[in-house]
Length: 211
Image 1 (spheres, rainbow, N blue to C red):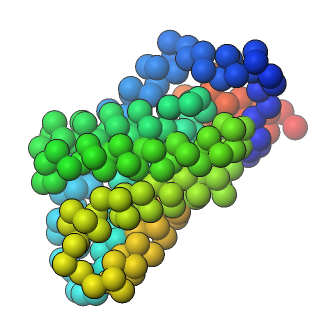
Image 2 (cartoon, rainbow, N blue to C red):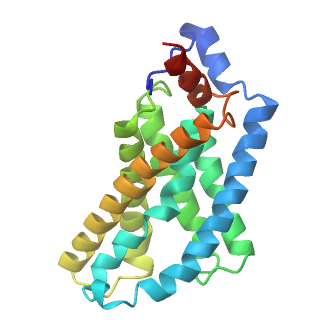
Image 3 (cartoon, one colour):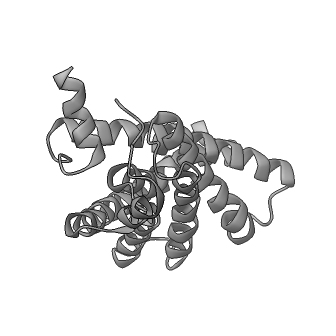
């Protein structure tokens, strides 16, 4: 899959990057709602899975958290415009909240921090690179923002620092693999169906087939 986008350069390129089309907005909202429903469903599964003996070491439950980082990664990989990752993750968090998440309004704080984490990685690459390494980095930074800026203080302030570091490591690994690589594979699969023909991943899919 081609991973480098080649937008216009200079001032016109910058304007083009921020020029959201109607389909971009609709797609961000649609992805956010769909992912928000998935967040809610995963929350129900998490309640049972996190109690399994496989997660007897409490920080290891961070391995289950990657799915909650998918919104920012997928939104950024598909729409490829400033703010798409953040807004997709935020919409997902709001939908999860409206569907009665067990974490209440805290999911919106999480959505903001996770979305910012993913967004900063796409910004660091000037919204021009969207390969698996960038996706994994977006998932990882989303995890770091969530854990260090929120969960360490809101949910696990009673843990030792070693426990907190272990949780960060597990969460970041899940963010890189599940949200990052998994999100990249998901976008690639969607592109192969023709659903993303109006976006970079869809055009890249057809470019590969024409070679």
